[in-house]
View 1 (tube, one colour):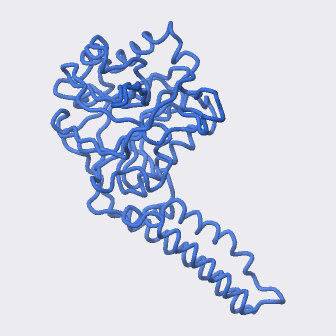
View 2 (cartoon, rainbow, N blue to C red; view 1 turned 120 degrees about the horizontal axis):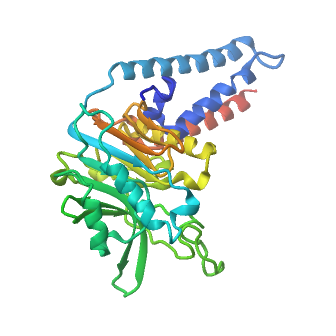
View 3 (cartoon, rainbow, N blue to C red; view 1 turned 120 degrees about the vertical axis):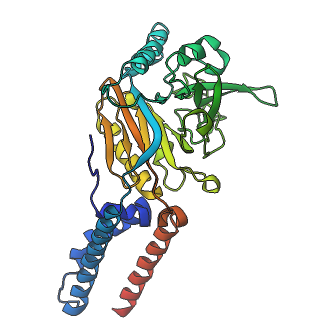
Length: 367
């Protein structure tokens, strides 16, 4: 399924980011307040309205120009399979269901391609905590994963991780692990933006209760953001920025600027939200991150919505909420260059907000 996913003006995310475009939206919505009344001159009022409408027209034109130069070529030699097992949250961690849930992911990964004429996938991707075991400590689990890993390729999955620190304390992480065809764990990543009250308890010395998502245990934060380089094991897979769950909602905090990736990978579990607006909102937020950074984004969710978004915010593939299945897809190429937002971040928004404040002060003193 392909589609534009957002309007031309919304490509301004690559200029101003979500905060900057929100500011422009508020300004546009405020234009009726500038209509002439007995306390204002008609020239000033209509000049303000014309300026606001001109800004929207310029943004629309710029968005059309940006889409006209869009890159539609996929990364050569890379074929992904995104697995969405649609496991109910009530069953996800149930002791009697964990093995069955794991086997569901194995079965979907081993299924024949939907299009027999298309090249087979060489990278299989599972969602957040798809494996309910400590992969790196369990050779049997890794071998089971290796059995559905494409030859010369990788299986990337969300899974809990545990390590013992230099202080002797055992720590737990909401992680991502990549396994190759031999069953070796070749790379890992630990979520760094943890959910307050869900994955850790703020002010724990005053709130002696455990985190919700960890069944009372707390997760530790990993270093991030990071860029993973796995090309040697996955037939030319470009370096990517892993994002687990809601790490993708933070503008300006999804890539390592010192080691810029070529695409974004979001593993998540929206089963917590059921069939509500939440998963739809989260998918659109991921579209925004793709446009802001000018990078393709792949999203793999337990119960949906999974899909592929190119660097211009266009949805290339989609597996809907609650659907069980998989997507076999190419990976969109990242365009050359860096977006204005990726270079400047929210400084553009800050300058715009300051400009509005100064304009309001000047208008007040003129009166």
